Image 1: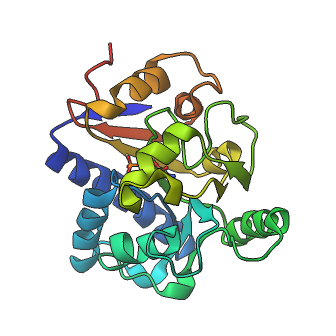
Image 2: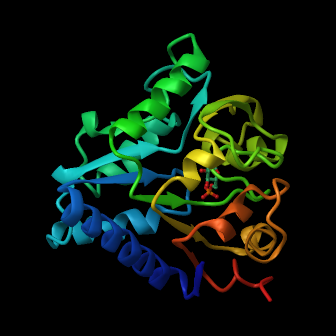
Length: 246
Ligand SMILES: N[C@@H]1[C@@H](O)[C@H](O)[C@@H](COP(=O)(O)O)O[C@@H]1O
């Protein structure tokens, strides 16, 4: 695991370096590349920086396919805070992935187990994820794998922890009751199967989770501690997020 601590503005560029290199490697090997997409505030600057790389011709967006980490269950299709819409706003305006080239778990089928399985199959059919962008929850969650999620978990329906719903209320006008109670999420084993992981985090609110994830025991109590086991993981932090690291 590589941990880089730099000012936030520089962090996005270092993370974009890692993501770009992984995508270029995949394109050189297989003629295309699969990007794993995280939502939330953490990767916003990274996605802008990645857009610059695309405009500079370092990455050909037409060769990319994207898979979301997770999706809320219970929002109407097209809801502004559904992760499919968030990805349109936060990633696709910078990195022009075609709509058909971006998939997320489908929360509208009425059969969440079947949708979860179909999503795993779609990722496998694409050849797996080349580089997975990650944020980290304040409680150490990855995607919507809350503390206690098994390391061998796959895409499935999960209930959101109260802390996660409170943290995410800021995207729902501050109203916790508007935050869905469930989601479909890639499992920890699904995430760990990506060939490369790039986690970005900033701010003191993430410091405790990062100390547990990077320097604590590898344990389901902190789902993000699985990064310690991954052969190609890069973590890019600003000084505040890194402030509790030894
Ligand atoms: N499901 C997402 C995660 O994928 C994300 O990493 C995390 C942190 O979000 P933020 O970057 O906005 O702090 O929260 C959300 O709940």
